[in-house]
Image (cartoon, rainbow, N blue to C red; front, side, top):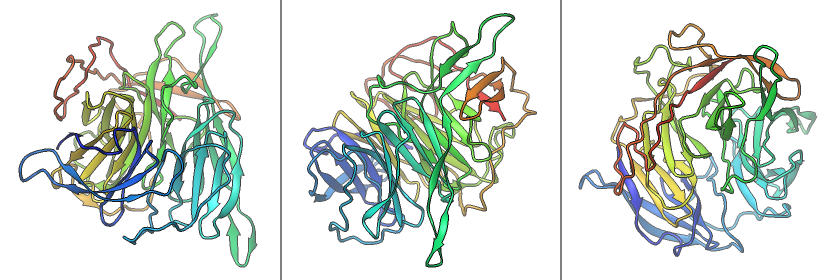
Length: 431
């Protein structure tokens, strides 16, 4: 693995707000505060043993404001670009969007506090989801098309389930209704102490426009950023990413709190990999390994579903907040965008992440209860539409802080730019 910040003029020194790889050609598209989308060819650096570079190819200059989110359709095959449809209904800026698996629908989240599901071919609004009370900063479409999810600065994550309406012309009509609204966690009282409810997510003071959540490519679980959690009323706030199992989307099943800054985006590698058998006590019971990236305001964590701690941590790459993450279709490249006007490119060697394998039928994530590294702290309650009780478990994980790095390098050990002595405790919540 080799990479770093590519020092070129990405968007006329303006913030780079979003990016995505084309699912076939591997072109990298970036969107910026200069109202432009630019297309780049990524050049490998392995021969010269340098970081990968980007060569400008084209611009898509059709926009009247900043490009906050861009995603290629999964059915996109063309290389000739023109405006296909202009979808206009949101009253304010769109902050995130996601395609349905078949490319027939889009979901978008906006500063107008709403989500809209669009019929792409008709170029019209299919459904409006207006349950949030503040900006919708992240949306995600279940690859199995049963759910969509949204995350807002009103400190809630909403899970919508498809309840199709009566068939029209032989086809069921999509109809999403809110099934769960995840808001707070209640710490169970010790002795006669009064119980206290704590919010699970950061409020609107989070210094980012984005809270980009993501489903795993097999649909078995959902990753939700911008988590904020307290183990007790006297403890300090822990920044975390929540993992929701498809088996129970009403509450998080796992936390990934190895972060010293708020988490703003998560993204899955599109490929699955063979199991390495390195950690039979892991939390995910899957017949393959999935790899995903978690971006905080100033660092990147790479996890796989077979390991408890991150498999790599990158930090000190940017002078301003990270805004988005993208994986190439072949898992060769990982890209980050930042408000400092630059992007970071990471290149993986062949099979460095593992041997790619076809995805089998989706298998529900299971949180193991027999692991010797799991301990039980106090119970807690997750506040949803119908509160439920969950039994917590913790796993010890130390995060090293080695001081500021002037020229960050990539390794399988933590690299950070701020010293700290606090011990981090990842937590699994048993359904």
